[in-house]
Length: 275
Image 1: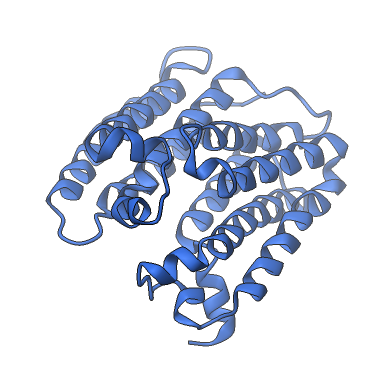
Image 2: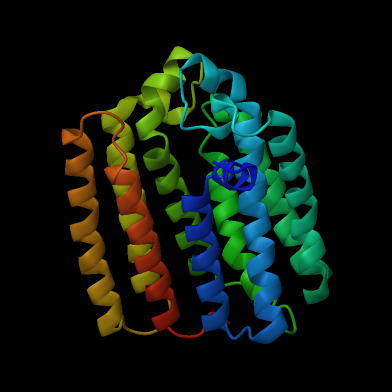
């Protein structure tokens, strides 16, 4: 594996790409075009790279102890120093690339990046581990809206739906690593309530996010809203069941979360204007 590919893998590319794609689609639906759309996408991508790289940098020793050879630092494919420096550069880049959109958008994305990094340390091992997901995911669509000309205020239902989606993603995201985390002293909220309760929390929060997107915007729900809600109610139970039946690392529910996230973005785009 090349160092460049190893560095990319250290950034947690799957969820990072999903979040970036979702926010870029949202930005397009909100009315961003051309260089404004590019700035939004790059700023969100930078926050995802920063959080992913710093997370792997901080977890390097723990990954080595648990034999996580799928992690590039633990396997020796890339150095921890390279990953850590890359994370810091990405964190600084997020508000810089957003600055052409205005000071308020730059501050908003900077706060989102800082909150995400606070999950990496020190909140990851505390009962408040879900808090950065709530706040950072709520801030991302807020950034998309305030980055529009005139810096309009984001609607409450939009921020609430994204926050619920982020919280649900947190509970699902840690499920594959619960045993490894417990062996090395990681005690976030999902670890404290256990795998079964975390699966339930993920499902409830994600369905609540979908419901907020369907019923939150003004007016009656559209046909696409009802279709998206129906799809989410099918995808999540399938992912939950597959995770319970899986042998090895149960990633099925996490992948179902990504599917529901994309469903929610489609719901958002078809729900009408966000300003």
